[in-house]
Length: 121
Image (cartoon, rainbow, N blue to C red; front, side, top):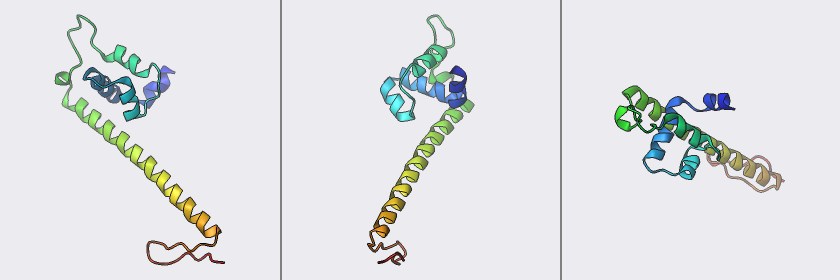
């Protein structure tokens, strides 16, 4: 399962989630925000990326490189766009289904271009 997780989430994304947790975000909020399933996923990332006591290389926003920050921003943007595409796809499917049902009932459907549906009783 760990290999699946490595393929599903980028290193930059995991670090971003850990960083947000370290800055006060809750597990539940991060799971909702990024669509991460409930379970030990974020805790595992915390163990992997959080500094251990006595560690001289703590993971703070001051130590991230510009490339890491760019990757994190890109991962956030991709996640947001994927979520938007999914929502728009659902909206489109709902509207198409509604039109189909109305047309099957024989009710006129006014299309955006001003025409009416061709299916009438």
